[in-house]
Image 1 (cartoon, helix red, strand yellow):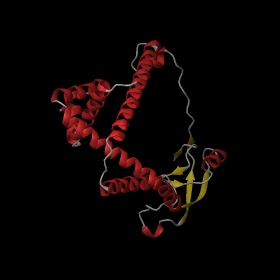
Image 2: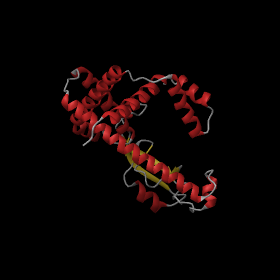
Image 3: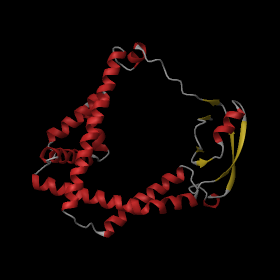
Image 4: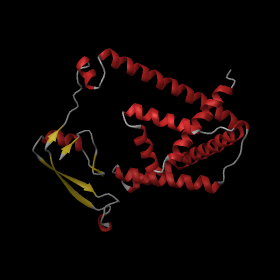
Length: 242
């Protein structure tokens, strides 16, 4: 197999001292690790049981960065390094602007929620919290954490997760109320322009892009996120920031 010596897990199984032993053994060596089989093993009788992982090291990889020159830029479809740097600079500036806008939007929403408190049904909060924690349990299992570590992690974060779920749900209800009051919605032209932007960015045909979202039954999600962006822009425009 090919092994990244920076990893601490293989196939979701936690392996102690993986990096050092792999580097010490060298290419062509066979290394045996004592492991604990994961809780999602196909055979239920093997879950959590001790086992051995026998690894033949075929190669060790080290990241080598290419030279930053015109040839490297041309490999990325830019005319030269100057154009590549200009594009990266523009992207960084755009990301900073987006982050600044997002921070302002969150402050506005937090102020509105503080001034107009309301409760979200406990059952809704509890259900969403449980779904998130269940997903995190699966992620932790695949990361090779033991059942005890996972239980401790989820217990430690459950209250914080519930608080965050409550906040996100309230924010969602608030945004929906603003959209209905101000008649903010997504037009077909806006949806088309969104797909055109994706197509231009990825070098794909716009019909192919739209078909992909239709096949994934994701048009409603796209409309939802576009509408949310319009609501947030509306709030930034109308807000009086001291």
